[in-house]
Image (cartoon, rainbow, N blue to C red; front, side, top):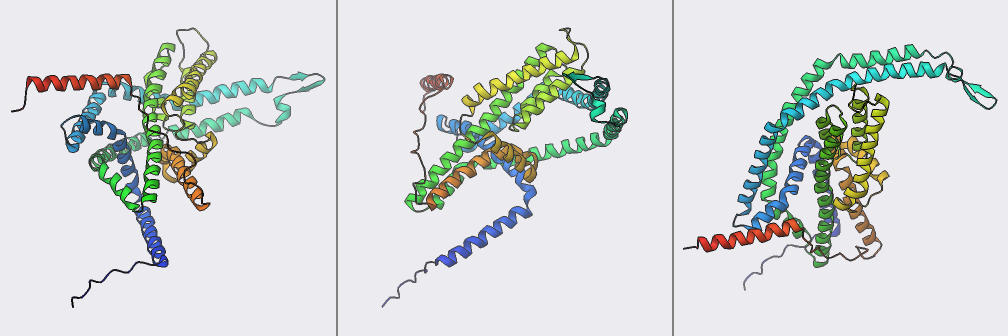
Amino acid sequence: MAEQPSQSPPWSTTTKAIVASVALILLALIIWRFQSLLPPLIMAAILAYLLNPLITWLTSHTRLSRGQSVFLVYGALLLFWIGGGVLLGFVVVDQVVKLSRVLPELIPRLVDQGQAMLQEWSSRTITIGPYQWSLDTVLPGLDWAELANQARSAIQSVVSRGGLLMAQAVQATVNTVGVGFLVFILSIYISNDAPRFAAAISEIAQQPGYRHDVERLMREIGRIWDAYLRGQVLLALVIGIVVSVSLGLLGVSYALGLGVLAGLLEFLPVIGPVTSAVVAVLVALFQGDNYLGLSPVYYGLLVLGVMIVIQQVENNVLVPRIVGDALDLHPLVVMISVLMGTSLAGLLGAVLAAPVTASLKLIGIYAWRKMLDLPPFPEPEPPPPRRQNSLVRWLRVAWRAWRRRLASTHPRV
């Protein structure tokens, strides 16, 4: 009698829990040990995610394979970076370097003006009804000149290390170029194998019900990251151009550098736009004469008003149309998440804090409803949008017409 093949016994719940716990601990140790490799890997994944729609479109609408499409897109991106660096790099870098040199000089001048204003206000007497008081009576014995000298000395000690800071900046630039090259290479591999990653994640949940849950969670998380990342890139381009043009029309010095700064700071929610506005106002206050003939204070207030108008248009017109309600987070939650992300992972943590928090919120709601035996998703999934941009539709029609014409002119043998 033939021996029956032995079957592997199923694991008990305790064994599964032990294996899962050990795997999570090992994963946490690996992440902690090689945490320096995480930022380049995350940036490479973000770049691959941003370029994936274009690569997918080329693969599905041309005869190119995915590898060829990846090579074409990344080659074009590399040429764009090199060409953009040659054409605009010198101008942008020149203005940014000049701006970085001017900013340390603005702070001591601001201290001097503040000292003069405080000394003037301290000698004034304010009368409200029968009461009279002055700043000297509220803060008696305070030497404003000594306080300003201490502030100026502290600032000068920082500025005096300009050579060391410049050397550190050069070293940081070289390191950034090396990291950028590593990110570029890693992103090529991730883009080429992106469909396999998505299929592997879907295969983790074998049961039909959980497979549906996982696929929907992936679509919802993808919607969050798609709206945030691509939306922030588009917002950065729009805000950078608008700020450069607006400040240039007002005659503000280093308008192009300030526009580049405003575009880059768009990736920092809440904090970034405020910082770019403050820098623009400081430059306007201390640049000297302006063709409008306004005093520095009124000129700075005009620039502040323009920056506020730009940010209001962004928050009320551009953000709802570009990003929408994909994050669904309160501004206070976004600010706290940015601070926490900065403390955990620096600048990269601040940039990715909002979409990470929104993704964790989505997963947390799913787990909470499952624990309460409620339907995992409170609302049915909306159908995918079927609308197409008119430009995209026109390009698709033109592409199909060109392919038909090419096929009729050069038929296959």
